[in-house]
Image (cartoon, rainbow, N blue to C red; front, side):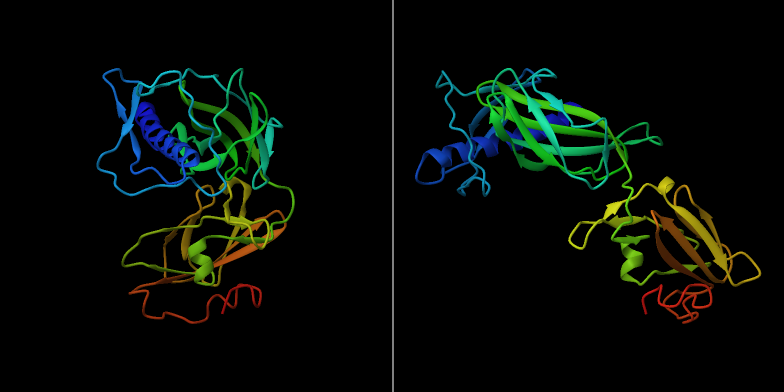
Length: 309
């Protein structure tokens, strides 16, 4: 599985790098993209033109690749280089969710001028690292030969693995990773909500006893008005469930945020995180949830104005 992922990154990174290098050295873009073809040796690849690719290409905006100066005119053989070809350094042993940091790249030789970045989070259920980002491209800022940096932002808390993949011309493909710990921020979030879906529905969740499928609350936060929503670990959130009924309306697992319908009625889920609150009104009906069971929307249970109208 690891080699399969490497080959995908190699195909993309090397082809893009070579095309951009060629475009940077000529007045017009190349007529065809090169592609990376695996040789009989499992970890060796050869760069060749792709005859089926007819459209021209140009490098990404702001990317200025270095020209290729290989000592031979033969097709470049590209191997996956051994680990620690490039050493990765972070500024602290523990970083903070949503706070940018600088990842330092150190090498005894050259550094790639562009790398693909991915983040993975440790899953105790699966006992493995689970990918949470899909290979964003970053240009490396070079301070001197063999030393460069990339600005990154942790997007999950807990045990996180930062991985990079890049191409060194005439040498090979680098694939490095570093594991870090990411903690929750201490300040109150700009916005705290229990689910993007719930937010669009004004915190209203319909469940049906005839189709007893559950619903999972996925708490998220925004650190500022222009920041992207970041998922919050369930263990960092405190929940409280109240109901105006004499019987149970829902069952709720705070460790997973999963809600299941138990009886018809309404229940309010209140969540607390770093001084912020979020609410979800759960309406459990006996029939199709498209039929309005009650428009009360937990008004007897929630503070006025807490839920969208």
